[in-house]
Image (cartoon, rainbow, N blue to C red; front, side, top):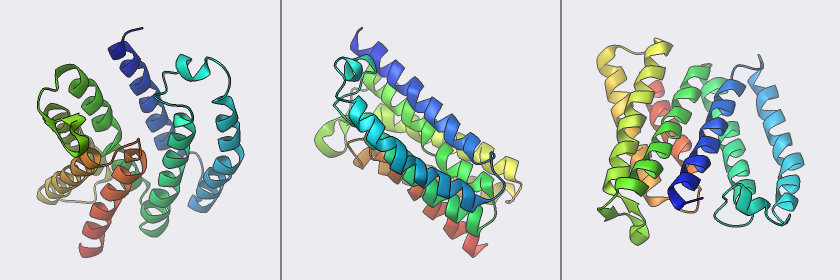
Length: 203
């Protein structure tokens, strides 16, 4: 399998993870149960994923860049959910705000990787491994995704909705640009959460 099809496969797994986390917001009625189960899953499942990374051929089959990558991504994803759910759903009482935080990262990150890898010619950021084209894709998808989620929420007037979405997209795009080693899974949604939380507190 060539390099680009491998990247497509990776991002399909990425989007499945994003969809699963978003669905998890609406599976239980109490955010404390949701967060507790998520944290328990880290404790129980991470050792299994870690051990699986030593099975010959499994890392290559799932196109992991290095051994143990999916285990660390799993922890980052679930830890991020625990924080975002606690703040957006637990403190503010709005699950949709948590969804907006995750959407600020998920679709845009996938677009940044795929478009950047295929069309990225202007290298930027730390170590020059990311591209302007990829970052612009991240910004556009992040902005549109947050706009849709916040529109569904009905919490903001249109001018405020656009302002929140714009600032959130800028912050998550910058975060994605400078965070390496797959930790954008954690830092991008949390950065989006900070922006959205500030607007919630101010408004």
